[in-house]
Image (cartoon, rainbow, N blue to C red; front, top):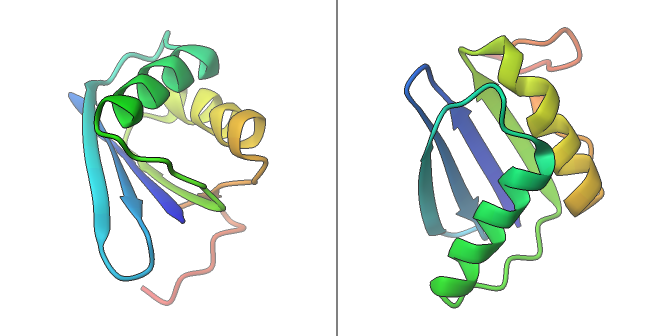
Length: 96
């Protein structure tokens, strides 16, 4: 499953895509001080509340708040074991 994270100045939105549809979309306030562990506690608690077991295999991040990207990368690596694709970084080659 794909976890798509869209980090804006006001809110950060997490959406889970199973290949055919979005299973869940969660929203939290954007705070640059939030740690990877705090993201995980928030995320896993809400998934449990919605009864969703998400086996995340891929993560993509878009952000207008560069200070948040580091902890979102750590969140992805630590809890899902995958290196996220970060839109706008040199290693992200999308034909946009």
